[in-house]
Length: 305
Image (cartoon, rainbow, N blue to C red; front, side):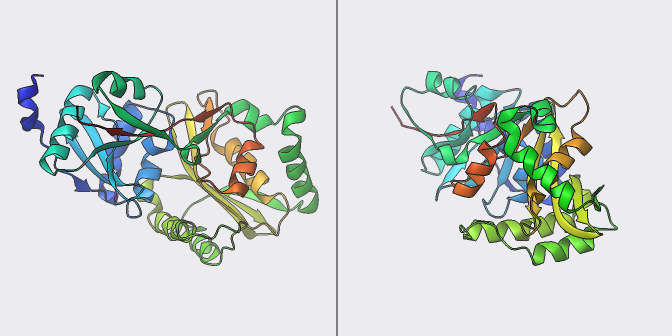
């Protein structure tokens, strides 16, 4: 495409709503990236918190978000990357704002560095995704998985009447009540943590629209935890994990049973358990499962030459 044709691709962003789920899923499924920012569940669930919007040009989708106190854009997803970048440039020039791309992965970063003469790259460890090899996470074989394996064995011994079932209309009202009464297991009770609970309730209230894959852990018929996520390509994404820590090993049991329910088949190779957002407790927990990779995601600010 000629540079002079950029204006025919002027971006018009639409606020993401539930009605856009199928549109987003189509792009994320056609161009899988194994990172949580490229999943429908995370994008729609956090749409109000990050003011997520999207625009489509020439078979290519671009997301915009308010991240770290500024407007940023995703790397274009679709068949015409160059047109997408041209359109982002034009949009930023027209609105006199800096060109900032967020959640740029390791495959996308070289494209930006080659195209633009000067970029400022910020790779924030707090926002790296934890990626696991599915079979290792499911089977927990070997000494390095001793801690989560011991927690699971402890849970089974303490609570032999445990059950694990799919989320459906019969248990959603109880899950909403559980979420309303949820107690955090971290000292980091920040605004985002409380906002996440509101988002969990919104997902549960619109469970069919989201198309989530969910599971409920119970002890003697009482809910002690639940998980929700989705599958894209060869990766299972765990978007939500909430458990009552007064039941020892509940989180580890929840993780294991969720994988057994939704990732037992050979088509699933990896599990993405998202970021730790700098929370020390979450970081320790996620590292204890020995990720095969921390998926680097950078914020790239393009400087005008």
